[in-house]
Image (cartoon, rainbow, N blue to C red; front, side):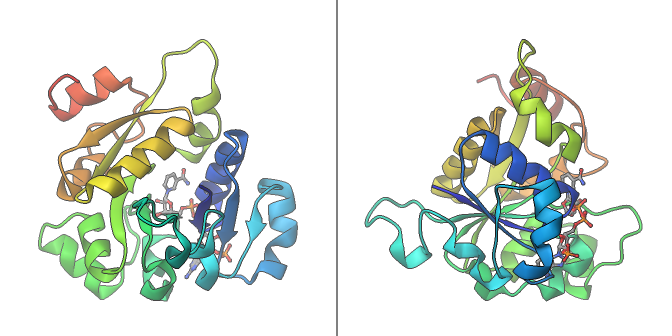
Amino acid sequence: MGLGILGAGRAGTALARAAQSAGIPVRIAASRPPRALRLHLAQYAPRATAVEAAEIADAPGGHPDDSPAGSGIRPLVVLMVPQEDMDAVDPEWVRGTVLVDATNRWSDEPLPGWLAEALRQGRSSSEALAARFPGAAVVKGLNHISHWDLDTAGRAAGTERRALGVAGDDDGAVRQVADLTRRLGFDPVVLPGLAAGRSLEPGGPVFNQPLSAEGLRRALGLPDA
Ligand SMILES: NC(=O)c1ccc[n+]([C@@H]2O[C@H](COP(=O)([O-])OP(=O)(O)OC[C@H]3O[C@@H](n4cnc5c(N)ncnc54)[C@H](OP(=O)(O)O)[C@@H]3O)[C@@H](O)[C@H]2O)c1
C-alpha cells in the first residue's frame, strides 16, 4: 500500500524520502498545484508523485472504493499541513482514509476558530481534527520527531531503534499506522485512544525525545509490552 502526504514542506518531504527509502510509493500534495511543485520536489523528494490535494486519497493501493474487498485496509494519508491552514483542507479529500495527524501547534500559531475552541475546551488537536474530518479514521502519529530525524533516524544502522507513539480509537486504523511506523524504521508504541495522543504534542514528555520503546512507555506511564 502506498502513502499519500498532504503538505510538501519540511515534514512532508522528509516523510516522502523516508517512505521511499522503505520502498513505499508516495503521492504528495501542497497548496500549489502539481505543476508548480515540480522543481521543489526534484530537489526535496525526487521520487514522489505530485498530485492535486483533492486526489490525495487515490494513493497507490487504491481509492477508498477500490480497497481489496473485505481487507479492511484503507488508504493512508498523512496530514503535514500547518494547523493554521487547516480551514483550507477539504474533509472530502480524506473521506474513507486512515488520516495520520502529524501536526503540531507552533507556540504562537494563529488557529482556525473551531480548532482554537476545541483546544480551549481541553481536547487534543487530533480529537478536534477527528470532528472536522468525520469521514476519516484519525490517528495521531509521526508528529513528535523533527523532520531531520524523520529523514534519517529510521535508517540509522547500529543504534537502538527509536520509538514513535500511535494514538487512535479505530483499531484497524491504529494497526495500519503502527505498520507504517515500523516500515519507516521506528518502533510503534500504541497509546490508549486518540485523546491520549495529547501526550505526544509539544510540551509533552516525549516531544522531540529520542526514546526507545521501553523509554517511551516509561515516559508516558504506559505498562511494559
Ligand atoms: N518540521 C518538522 O520538523 C515537523 C515534524 C513533525 C510534524 N510537523 C508538523 O507538520 C506540519 C507542517 O510542518 P512543516 O514544517 O512541514 O511546514 P512547512 O514547511 O511550512 O510546509 C507546509 C506545507 O503545507 C502545505 N499546505 C498548506 N496548506 C495546504 C492545503 N490546504 N492543502 C495542501 N497542502 C497545504 C504547503 O503548501 P505550499 O508548499 O504550496 O505552500 C507546504 O507544502 C506542522 O503542523 C508541523 O508542526 C513538522
